Length: 490
Image 1: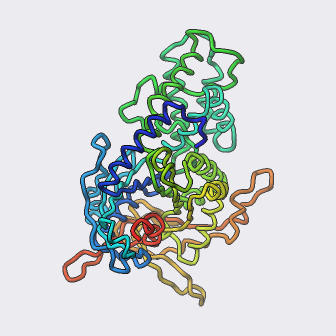
Image 2: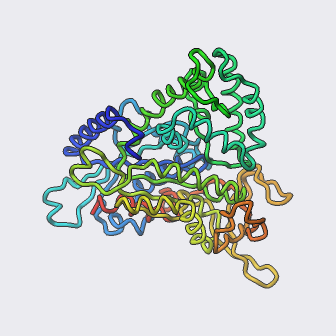
């Protein structure tokens, strides 16, 4: 994050927090792993599966400490931050394994500490290392990250950006009521609470329409408008951008002055505390991406996801760490961007999903790579809900996936009840993803896009072996663990 987005006072407070963390690390070596992603990306499922597989010795052949036998155990421990809600792992894994339903999505920040016991691969390190590493997993909504760029904006810039975006593409229809209401408002008139409320409600409705499954748009700041929590109804959340603001300073006591003050309060009360207390303390980060949802909705949703991910990744304080930076200005030295729900495609399309995801974050890859941090892109499934098979059609083998569609899912005219398994041909992603990124001015690209059938499946029924339930199946969770944690367990 550019230094201009934080003040000297902010940096001093962040430095003190980092010094306290590093002092605690001398006694108990710890790595803080941030897990984020925009709506429906599967943050809760990822953490639950990661913890379940480590606790139960899951099938993780590419996670070297477990494969080599150097990892001797993993346990859940009390988290260090008493003011942060605990990630309710037990409830989530019960929903996945026993009830075969997907757990509730991330609505606020939470934390969980997992401690791994291991033997170092180095004889020298074994002499000085306790062979313990605590992983503080910090789960937070990706929508909160989209607020961080607001720290570098004043109210006029925020209003101009929001209005320009709302007037583009499909958003122009979704924002019609808010824009029509805003056009009738005299911004220089005396401040009025009911007018501010009507504007905030209309703007929030527009954001909700953008987020709906029918649209699946991703650039939705301010993030707390959709996840207000205990701030619902507060002045800090009762504002909205205003189009075509007059030049000059806002008259004292005017509606514009009220909106400016509340926008600054939002940054001060909501955004800055999150940045300082949580985001600036991360060591590693995984960003989960539901690229398939955007692909299913077409190029505009894909391009909006690209914009949102660019905004998110631009906020990371990425870079290599040394003794000085780890004490004063901690950096995220490894970032993993993972396209989730790879089990909804046949494995023949997994590499194409990775290529498309890499294209989504292409600019961020270059920036983070130049900072000295490691960055990786992969396709994974935190919980594998399907298996692969093939069926004969017109004398040819057709690759399909087999699973139990969720109740209410539809394929053609068939509606599923949530109990019956079926085989689905999901389609193939294109080898070249550029058709999703061409603007309207470049012509209609719909003929170049594949016809995909993306169905939501229930979690799998886990097998039992000698009376023991096996760990949650996955795709490439071990590869993700190796990238994020492998070097710290060497």
